[in-house]
Length: 187
Length: 86
Image (cartoon, rainbow over all chains, first blue to last red; front, side):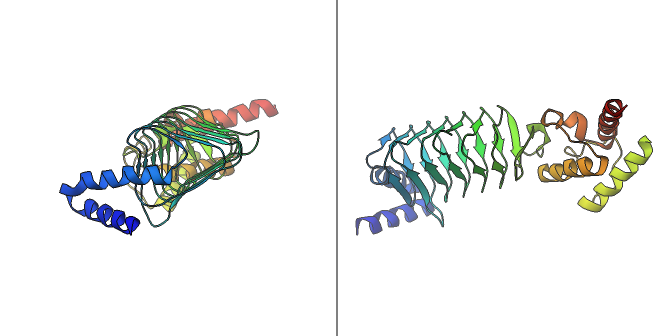
């Protein structure tokens, strides 16, 4: 009943601007439920479903947003694993974070829909600040991504990406961000 | 030699991206002839078509963003290959 009411307020808030604050309040309340047992910062918003399977440590920074959509965002943190999400990160729907050792995401990163990030024991993942990971990209274990890098849609990243570079393709190749479209379309 | 390379590049770009009416000095990106995904196709084409591996650091507009730039880049790479072989 409570969940149904929250869904209703969420939907109405999406379509009626005057009720946007109510929608935000629901998303904040949902973050406490969905991220129960995690170290959660201020004003974290969870719109829609967030599936969390937590056997390790999860830290979510201030003002992170998890967007609703046709598929839930799924977070799995195995025993002894640590997931650290920096402040103001944005996750579109269907993102998958699978942590066995350590995944550290910087500040103000954007993760598109269906992005997958996974590490492995002894092969942590580190993502810098202001990184954009576009729709459907896969970041594999052991990868470090530098500040300001862009991972193009559908790319599979198995090697480190230096700061400010564009990674594209499967396997992803590195190139200057100036080679993306003038409008900043990375696919 | 440069004319042959330019002609081959122009034909491939026209056939692949259905664009025409551009000069050898026109920027592919500024004129929206090729997008970022197209750049990947272009890189794959020059690697297979001209027989060298483009290094990550070389994937910049100065090398790839016009036919003129591509001709110079390909000549430089092939010159390097010949020097290695010789």
